[in-house]
Image 1 (cartoon, rainbow, N blue to C red):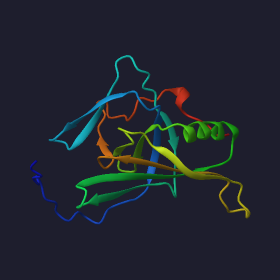
Image 2 (cartoon, rainbow, N blue to C red):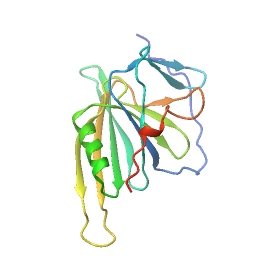
Image 3 (cartoon, rainbow, N blue to C red):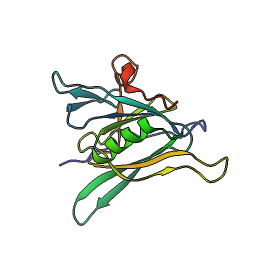
Length: 181
């Protein structure tokens, strides 16, 4: 098998801005395939016909992040990517706690939206699993009162850059958003 390089990269401007804006969760098993467009270098998710493709949106700000570690073995001829999503959800409420408990026992597909409008598909082939987290009240007035969650996905690829036909991200309806007030 040929492993041919196809492009180089110039040094970009120093205008990067880190962080993630939204995270979308969907039940595992409803994705039929993912198509890749070589011209845009982006992927499109294709759903199983007549499947419920509802995504549930969680708005985040601050210390939430997505990190991908590459593990490659010359001896075994293998390469895989561990996608780690660290979420911080401020404010404690019963509805969010109930949903996070459901996420903790599931292995959802996840889309992460950054502040540039990029959408990253995580756990697309194998789902993501909760590996840790906290429910914390904080001790001092300025401490976090909320939830933290760590999810990991082990995939053959790094998180996929996704494109959406309508440019509006995953199809979200009104019942997909939790208001913690």
